[in-house]
Image (tube, rainbow, N blue to C red; front, side, top):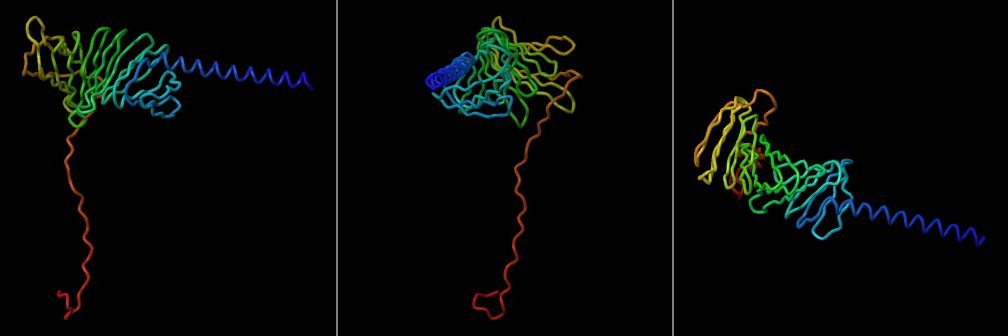
Length: 257
């Protein structure tokens, strides 16, 4: 009986040890994925489980294919394997193994901020794809009503493509880009250009180069292939409310007719 009890005790200790190792490995996996976060993030795992993580809370197991949404503050993420989708405002970045990015959102303006520390990451915002390499840093905002995406280069010369039309955005410049779903025309506006040796330019689908200065814009046909998201201005309206019939007051009523 004593030997059986000792065996059961050993089995229990082994089980506890295995559980501790599994937990520790999951913790390391989470720590290796999200290196730092200062705000609130929402994690949607591939199995559909949604987790809200507040600042200071322990990080859960975040498997490959998960979606991590930055609701406030910033996050630094580096997947050890597979990929993770990082959502900031209206922009989505697919971060692969070997990539390292820092992403944040401004609470007052909802402007997304992406800085690539290692690797290469594509950020999709509405109909525009922004390609960021190591050392490049961009701020992105998108209007969900008009479909206009605004891209500002904080560091590096950044390429942004809207339906096959490429904008080359030098450091310090800001561009607005949008596409018309009916005509497939792409509108590109140079909001800010630093000047000097920096050149703000647009490369059409045919390869034609158009230089833009501050305040200038161009419209050019987009690619004939690929789906274009459509955006329509929404009118504010009130639904008619049926007024209930008023009670009929008998003649001679002290309350009048």
